[in-house]
Image 1: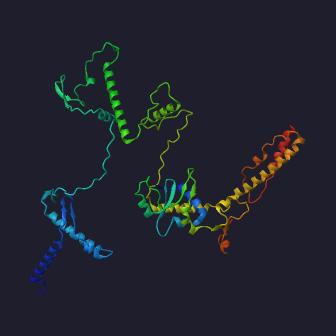
Image 2: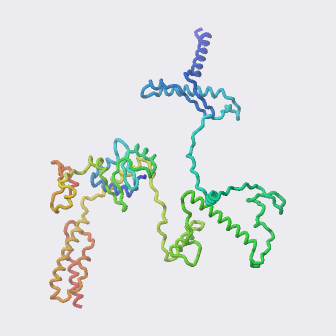
Image 3: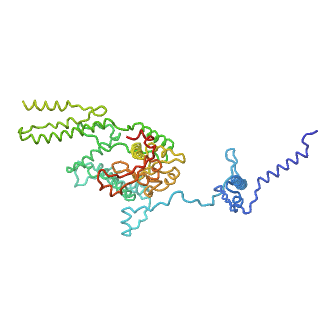
Length: 357
Length: 133
């Protein structure tokens, strides 16, 4: 039989094994350094093969990459494995390379007002316990915060002091005082933040109604009040004669820096095409109007001179009703000098008529 | 740094078109690369795409200039062309002239004096028959 004989098969199998081994085992002069926690393999062998390769070392680079990856995978196969949901998984050790910072080092914040004062006076924070013994409830409770030990707003019995108004609500008074303290604290926190970021808090100059506010302050207060609705002032009506506020439009939006270059080019070419098509060589209308205006002005100058000379004879020459100017407005004249003389005629008759009356 | 708006592009093109006319298309659409106009601190720069990508890595307040400065927009949004644009305008210029008097003399001269010699070849009158007024 001429089929593949057993010896040939065996020989082929052996050859395959050798090839596989060749592929798996990679010979390197210097061993690679492995950081399996980061799946990192560092090859410190001198790149002589690459240098000899020439301008396009694609094949050599690929071979190098294949070899190094093979070595890395060989190392991975030696790690202890475990089974996670029907997959065999290698457990990676801790990474040994220290990666650099992703973001820059944070700048030190400026000190708050209290911190500056404490530093100045040399005040150190006293170590306090978190829990305080509360007699009333017979428990250890927090010093501050939720369900704290001595919360004066939670008292159920308050004696009205003698100096106070008997009709005043002492409970409400305490709650109000608490709110004011919280608001003050919040304000100080925001002030500290503003100082840290070198900005300013929005000024509340004219917001509280006193009797003595300037016009600008009142205007500003009104604007703020208008915008302080749930719809940010969108459905607030204006008084009958109130003008719209200026400068309240959307911020200008520009095209992105690396927009579509092809689209930009197309738009510009389109713009150029429109510009070129619209350009008349000589704006005929403007030219004729200009010409007529010049002629009228010359005539007006001439008339003035004549009027001054004849003014002595005619007594008061009468008011010239700015005749030339009313005639010299924009007229849609035809091509080249279609002179229209009727305005001057009318003006003359009109003047004559009125003077007779 | 930002691209020009429609309005700004129009104003600028109108100005440049006075010098090079229809050849402005050749500046916008170049065969040897993508060039574009960018505005930085009111100045218009003509810069290749490659250069633009490099310039984008510099902080805005530290960037002084990029590519070629063609001119700037004034406070009232008029476009003023600068001499640095000459290299790009010269090949496409509508006409050439030789100054007959220096700049200072031009201001003091009488109205009828010749200030620029327009040197043309014989066929220019025929070539530019449509554009000559």
